[in-house]
Amino acid sequence: MKKLILLFVILSAFSINSYSQLVTFDSLRVVLSSSQYDYKNPKFYYNSSNAFSVLVYEKWNSTNSNIALRRVYYDSIGTEIMLTNNPTGQNINPSMSDNIITWQSNISGNWDIYYSLNTSGIWSAPVVIANTAQNETNPVIYSNRTAPIQYSFYYLAYIKNNDVYFKSYRVNPATWYPDTNITSNISYNCLNPAIGMGSMGGTRNIYFSMALSDTLKRIYTKTFTENYTVGIVSWNAGNEMYKPKSQENLRISDGRFFYEYDTLGGTHSIGINGDVFTFPVSGKNSNSDGNSFGIITNNLTWWSFTAFGCINKRNDSTSLKVIKNLYYNSPPNEMFWKNYYLGNAAVNSNVTASSPIIKNNYFKLILVCEKLLNGKTALYATYLTDLASQINNENESISFGLYQNYPNPFNPSTVVRFSLSVVSNVVLKVYDVSGREVETLVNEQLQPGTYSTQWNASAYSSGVYFYKIQAGEFSETKRMLLIK
Image (tube, rainbow, N blue to C red; front, side, top):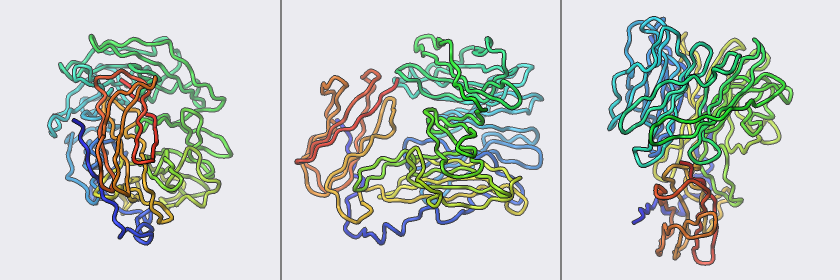
């Protein structure tokens, strides 16, 4: 039986005035600060409940650092959880996916890779996973989010001896499989690994940078195919993503691929398909990040990024630039971007975007960056708050609306939301790519409101599916992608 949740009944009390008063990057606020500690390298990670997002960061005291995290709720920030608590040495470069966090540490002398697992809300003590006589650095962890549990794996990539190494972890039974050097046939120094989804079910991509010289880097990608029985994956030959200029600062954030490239008269953040996300912001733009939540207006637009930010350097200043409702390429001029001064050109900062945090009829997306406060690095935030229900910008009611499923692509579950402003007989069904009916999610009369229903596709194979709503004379169909 499908679980149908009424998120909110649209109230006429929400007028255009209350809508316009919602917070949209109105200021830069202090989130974490201390006279004793520096808070650095913040990273938000996706949480499927949408009740909170997870913020991981480095907590520095003099020359040593530790890894800490907090839950960030709609209107508060949770208690700090220390994953490490070493009085000497450095714990840096955290990477998180679902219920595991990895980082690099030099508490034993050279750099090693550690991890911690979350079981029933409790984080385990740090466990070393890669600790040879060489330095192991720059870990990145990735969950395949595949059910049932015996098919659930985490994949780890890291750097050793200027090569990319790979390990896999099977959740049940808890097993780490041996390391594999996946760049042994590449003569260039390799760095900065990142892991993302592949183009078809059961495949994943590892991206990394190749340093052809001190001033020229190219991005290389290799695809591996999962093996749920023995955990040992198989690899393709790989290929280079050619660009004539250097591709810098490779990263994947919330499934999106970014790197920096000199183009359009400045340095810009570019996606894997060549989308220039920071155009037309002049200067050097870097470390961009964003996240999305479906905003439905009269135009029925689904935004790629509802909140997006980057670090901008120009002349003798460094600033945080933010924008809402960014769809691949930014609006035609820079007046739509907001600017927060962080310091002179020598100042460096990182920016990270939260997953959507929902409370009642509202959602919030938070952008966090680093900024000096009284000689210490603090974490500052600006945020976007908006209505999660179907209220349009012209304050006119829309009778029906079908939202894009989230997450998408997904594995194995996704949430479908729709809105009604009149009593309706609602039928919501899922179809496969051939048009065959797969499952009925909703078939009942419903009162006005915004509803949510979950589809668990554990029993179905990877591929494209369609979901269609029929409510009175209204009918709409959207596409979704299941990747296992």
